[in-house]
Length: 51
Image 1 (tube, rainbow, N blue to C red):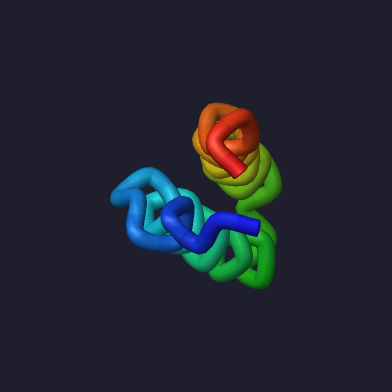
Image 2 (cartoon, rainbow, N blue to C red; image 1 turned 30 degrees about the horizontal axis):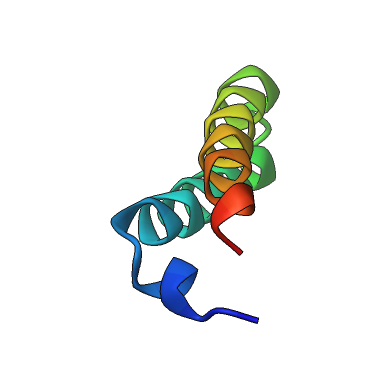
C-alpha cells in the first residue's frame, strides 16, 4: 500500500473539510455539512486510483 496519498494536499483538504462538516453537523447545519462531506468524498475518490 502506498502512503503517498497521505502526502497529497487533497488528502489534507479532504480531512479539513470533513472536520468542518462535523462541526456544522453538530450545530445543526445539515445542508452545509452535507455539502462539505460531498466535497471531501470527491477529493477522496480522486485519490483512490493512486492507492
